[in-house]
Image 1: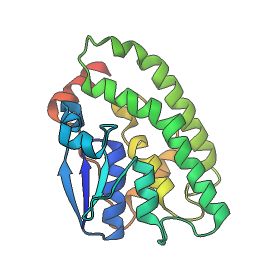
Image 2 (image 1 turned 45 degrees about the vertical axis):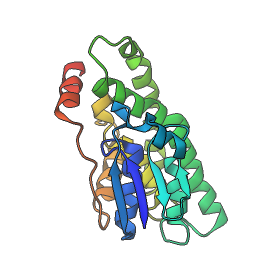
Image 3 (image 1 turned 90 degrees about the vertical axis):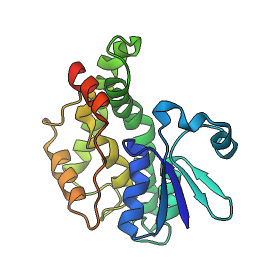
Length: 213
């Protein structure tokens, strides 16, 4: 049995849940609210010293962390990860892009907008984060103008990785209206078999999002 320690409103955690659902794998989900310190307990840190979610745990005690590494492990030998070495490398390049040029701006803007007080000094970073987020979206838009997916010729884990935070970019004040190809791609992802949506933030977070938009 696979156990996943995850925070449901987190895009990085939702990636793992979405792939597990679409693979039809049995798993146990332990809700772990990282925003309220659940990943800083001694028991959690003993398994994952980095103190983050998601964390995948096997019955034999093995632990795997980092969302995109978990996606790769789960997708191995399935249609969600290309078998051709070149196509696989292309998919991985988009997953690295997601972590270094996309998530670091779009996800962080969402977090600051939704999980920090209105008077937080971190909100001064929002204009820069939104600008860089739009730069990442522009790269994706150019790709999607010529290709339907990010995982080679078919839907797969690079699409899952990029979908998670792209779909909720407006939560961080990053409007998607100017990206028609991204909009079409988001709808294609939502129509894939056994798709599950990420839960909305809790009402308190939603109130912060509304107040900051």
